[in-house]
Amino acid sequence: MIAHLSLLALLSVAIYAQGGPYGVPPFLQNADAATRASFFALLQANQNKSEPQVKYAVEQWVSAQSGAIRVAYETFKSEIARYQKVEAAAHPAVIAAFSPAARAADAKLSQIAAQPGLPFESKQQQITNFINSLDGGVRQ
Image (cartoon, rainbow, N blue to C red; front, side):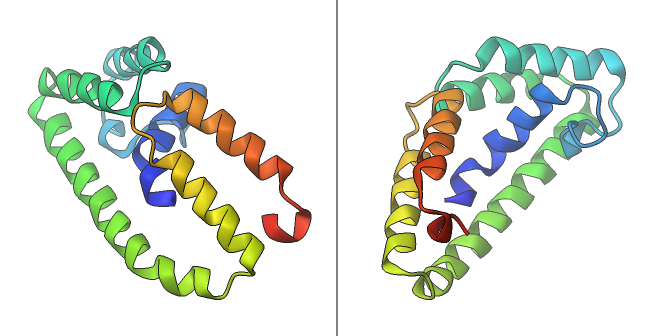
């Protein structure tokens, strides 16, 4: 489930933490303020779009940036893909230790995260609502 949200979650954090040290995606660490502002504006303008639409908009934006940013973005995407593989491989062992209720919750969270047509903002809200509805023992 985490892997499904990793890229968009990081980008979402960037929207809400503009200019903060933790709100800048790794590929923009060395970018100037105008470039960062342009990226944040792009995310703001696309926050209610589906995951494929946001990814397309980001890819288009990146393709118009400097070579350094394009290379840093490709490195970032590779790191995300590597993380997704590690998470996917570890996931079965992790959920095997879960209670039946926790396994059901994990399956539901994965189902929400896997909906590419759902805008990220809606995914985030559905996930938050679902987690908040869980029994305290399952949440942990």
